[in-house]
Length: 388
Image (cartoon, rainbow, N blue to C red; front, side, top):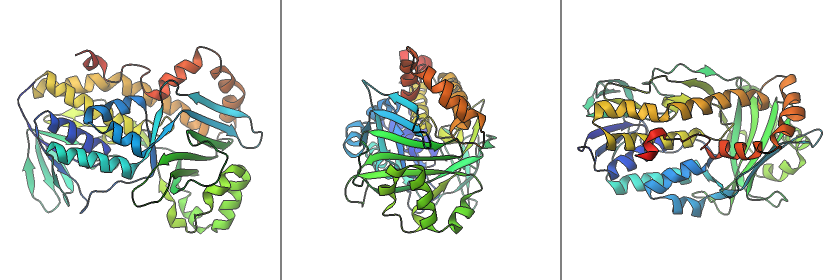
C-alpha cells in the first residue's frame, strides 16, 4: 500500500461518491466537493451491470443495493407496427440491477461518510491546476491529487464531445397492474425515431410500492415542442405505439413529471494530468443504449483505487488510464454503432436492425457474446489491474 494522500474529489455523483468511499477505505484523506447546497442525484432509473455490481461489493453496499433495486434477467424490444422482436438479450446466470439514482446515491453517500469522507457543499469548481482548485468566489484549496468527477457538464475536463441528435424524457411512476414481467427491461420502437421503454427499479425513497422508470425518445431539440403538446395527445400517441405502455402513464398528469435528458459522445485520450485524475462522464460520454454510463464511473473509481495501491502518484495515474483504456474505447465504439439503430431519423438502419442484425444475433455463439457485452465484461474492465 502506498502512503496516504490528501485527495480532493469534485462532484458528488455516482463516480465521485464511489471514488471517495473506496479511497477513504484505503486510508487516504478525502474531501468531496459539490456545487449544490445539498448534494442530490439527477435522473431516474439505471442498470448496474455485473461489473458495476462488483464495484458496489468492494464498497460494501452490494447487498443493500440488491435489497432496494430490481433484478433484471432480460432486455427485450419489439417493432411496434409489426410486433417483430428486434432485441432479446438474457443475463443468465447473472443479472442486471435496476435501481433509481436516488436509491444508489443514498447508499454511496452513506458509505462515503462511514469511510470518513469530508463533504463540502456549495463549492463550484472553476479551474484546476497541479493539485490546486479554484472555486466560485475565488477561494482555493490544494491537495496531493484532485479527481474530476463532476459529470457530463464538467467545466474542468478538456473533453470535446459531439451532441447526439436524440435524447429522451424520463419519469418515475408506480408499477401498475400489467402483464409485463417485473424482471425485464422492455422497449418498443417505431423505426428509430420513436422508442419507449419500461424499467422496473424496485423501491425509491419517499415513494410507496415498487417503482418504474419510463422513457420516451425525442429529438435533442424537441423538448419544447413536446411541452406544448397536450398530455392527452402524447399519451394517445404512446399508447398507439405500444398499448402495454398505457397503464404506466396513468399517474402522469403534468409535463413536469418527465425530465429531458440530452446525450453526447466523446472520449478523452488522456484522462489525467499533473495531480489530476478524470473519471466518469467527465472522461467519456455516450448514449445510454448499452446501460454502461454509471458502470463506467464505478469502474473508473475502482481502477483509480487499485492504481494508487500499486504505485506512487506520478506512476499511478498512467496505470489508471491504461487499465481503463481499451474497455472504454470498445464500449464507446459499440455505443456509437448501436445508437443510430434505435435513435435516429434513418429509414435504412432500422430495416437492417430488424431483418438482418436481430436474426443473426440469435445464432450461436452470438447470444453469449451479447450477454458479455451487456454485462460489461466483454474484455477485462480493469485491464492488468485485475491480476494485481
